[in-house]
Amino acid sequence: MQARETPPTKHGLAAGEAAAPRRADWTIDQGWDHYSAAEHATWKTLFERQSKLLPGRACDEFVAGMQKLAISAEQIPDFRRLSDVLRRHTGWQVVAVPGLVPDDVFFEHLAHRRFPAGNFIRKPDQLDYLEEPDVFHDVFGHVPMLLNPVIADFIQAYGKGGLRAQQLGQLKKLARVYWYTVEFGLLMQDGAPRIYGAGIASSATESVFALEDDSPNRIAFELERVLQTHYRIDDFQETYFVIDSLDELLKLAQIDFEPIYKRLEGRPEFEPGDVLAGDAVITRGSGRYHAARRRERA
Image (cartoon, rainbow, N blue to C red; front, side, top):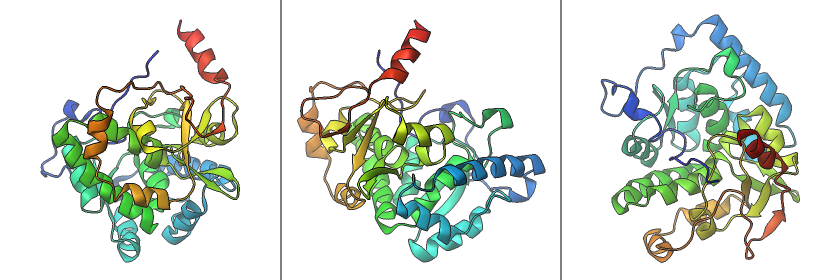
């Protein structure tokens, strides 16, 4: 069964369902002073839970980013203060948006080193799953890595590449690169996979599943393989792609994707759990978890 697939994170999922904000770039005021005590408490619950889970699981660059940001469990961070830190280190800033935004708006922000972050936080009964990214996913998951120069350059290049992919009708393929790196990427450190993707880093259950469960495949990242591979937005990933170092992403940022898109035209695409003969397999998964899920749905 093919997983439902859409562009990642902000762009394209639900933007058409809401009226556009007054500003053409969809930015809004964060409204930090309007967060309730209950909302700050939800942030604290999520922050403390992930802070206990990530030591030994998150990559060194994520840990270093958290230390530089100096955010805490006590309150939802103020985007203005986060932006002050980011500008000093990598020239990025965080801008508040009401949720999901159109593709072109998303790419335009990234191309100019503006990271659009949802200004709302999930409800207490949504701690373990929320389809639309909230302030915890965006800030806790993404912002620490934006303090790394390689990730900072890579995500800016992705924004520029996204605008180009739209023109070429290749957004679906490019979205897979973002999904399997920035959102759900793993990085080899000290001989073992570690987390750098925000979708994993901000999820208590997937932080453990991605690294320790026997079910998913863990396969060395290869660009054309990833461009041809569907992903899941409704559950844990069936396959995680693993890079050897962040420098691999920097090389991706320097590639002209147009000839690759042309070369892949008409080639078969792969399901999320497929393992191919040419894959460099780090861990071949049992598929146990998703097999059980499919039986439940049958």
